Length: 458
Image (cartoon, rainbow, N blue to C red):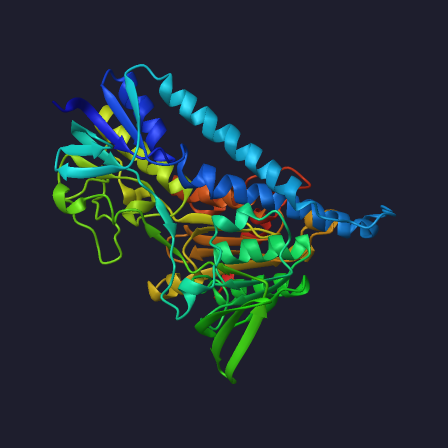
């Protein structure tokens, strides 16, 4: 006979453990199922390991620039990739172990390991057992997308997951994809000493950003020696004795790039194709993302989808917010909605990009009358003092409502400073509220009021 639970959670990524905790605290009998590693993408092959590598790469870059700060280093700088990897692995293992221990010690929560698959709208098979639940929460995350490029199945390409298993620095890393994941790894390995070539099919990097942001990001990476090939479609891949060859279709005609290692950074796909969604009755779109409403409910009333698998946000913070919405509505009598969430994210190259709200392109497409404020990081004292003056600040304001529509801070501490703008947007206060605030000197955030004081029609 199938074990019955009040709630079953498939996946222990960012939303899962916290939801299990809230539901069990409410007195419900909960099962949480994990088929691979506890903690999901963020802990195992996303945020935590990549940002650990970013930190190592930042240290390498600082050492290389030591003379600029008046520091003399006599011995040549070398990268011990095994130690870099060991540090990353320790961070991951600690976080993964802590999450598993938390779940296993949670009163009222049963932890099951194995692949989960629906056998009916209320039943899930895990290994040789079947369980049923009154409510089911799908939190299965995603994985790297492998594009159908001729030859890709024969070259042994790396993904954003397997590239972090390297214990030696690649001689020449080819990166297919010039967006967030690809650019972070491009800079990491360039700073570790690799030659790096980024191949992007669009005519600029990170195409979802405004042109000036894309151009500035390209400049940052090019200054460090990253070779960037834009408007270049990869038409084929081959393996040679020396490594890999990527065949390209470029505006100048056919071309080839040869390298020792190849990283695929084209995108990610949801882990829904082997979940048995047909048996559950849950609908998904053509890409496999589960369709949800404003409260994360699927078309089956007792089944919810949280995190990357619902296509409504591909970040740890949006996954966690999915949990907050579901928990508040189910347990606290709340009326929280996905549409209350303001788009916000970061690109963790160095210096980082912090983004909130609309881009200028999106605001214009929405018919907004704009006031725009800009300031280069060369005019931010904190950036000057740190010797990190690349990038700029940009804030968009609706000229009619005086509300902030969006902002981009590409520069040192941009990933932190953006929250000053984001918090003001959530209060639905006029931009003058932030403009008149008094911030601490010397910081990056203190210049945001100055930018707002220099708004001009755009």
